[in-house]
Amino acid sequence: MSDLSPISGAERAAVMVMLLEDEQAAEILGQLEPEELRTLGEKMCALGEIGPMAIAQAITGFVERTERLGLTAHDRIGQVRSLMTRAVGEIKAESLMQRITPADLPRTSPLELARWLTPQVLTPLIRDEHPQAIAVLLVQLDPEVAAAVLHALPDNIQPQVVHRIATLGPVSPDAIAMLEQMLNRRIGECHGQSVMTMGGPREAADIINAAARAVEKRVMPEINKIDKQLAKQIENEMFKFEHLFVLDSKSMGSLLREVDSDTLIAALKGIPDTQREVFFDAMSSRAADGVRDEINERGRMKMAEVIEAQKAMVTAARRLAAEGVIVFGASDDDYV
Image (cartoon, rainbow, N blue to C red; front, side):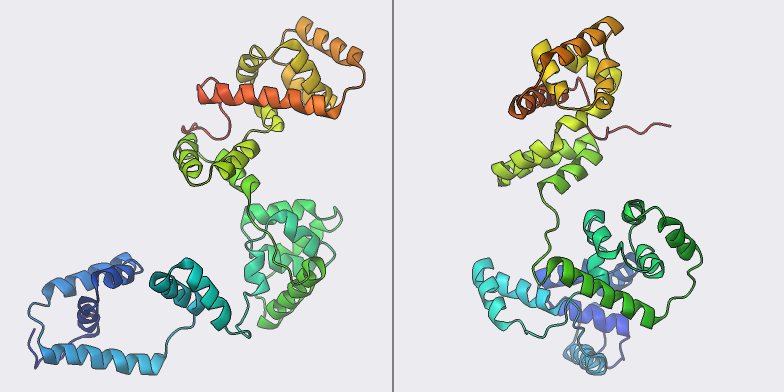
């Protein structure tokens, strides 16, 4: 590259990246779109010999542009925390960040926070609000979350909310601001200034159960290496007695052959008649009638005995699942 010829913006960017350490350059390149990465890569390959004047042009252009645009404040605290962690380690960095983080730092928007909340947390926040406000919020959530929140609202409110969603049209900034004020107020009323808990072993288990079997086989051994106690908690949430209700007749039959009669009767004693049917459907009519009679004749049982029996059935189911005899959660195959 000639020191005398002017360089384009893409060439300036290529020069600046070439001046960085490999790790820094890789981090920047990893944030580019494919077309941007291709263009920049072509310019980097075509640079040839880079003279002092070309470097000066690139730096001058960079300085002029940053002076006009400034530096974005997006996740500035996260950037500083990352740099501090790399410099002094996680523990010292966190202690330092607690001392230097501005007290008046803008907080996460209540609306942005709402997008991360579960339906169980969201519903109490909005169930008593005007249908218009609920509609504006629901259209900004993932459809599955919005559907769960809608289902949890009072029956007479649901049609009003759906009607407003369907006819919403443009929403003014003032309406969004009012919605955020409402969410902020309701979060304060329901949770005070305390941090709301999100995630946990149960949520992790739900995600794994909904994922392909290969995900569980890949993820759970790694979790066990990192934190055995946490892995146990997740597994306990992944395999609960109510998960047996969705087994097909063949899988249920395989399970019932592994469980003795006393354990089965005690386990079914603790659930309603309607939930017992999935177990009875996997038996012959005569065997099902016999178990029904045994349950009725058993009389009152301690809840601890029922739970112990249910745990024994879950343990048997987990073993059969590990052997590939029955399947929990999603399979690895697609069907049409």
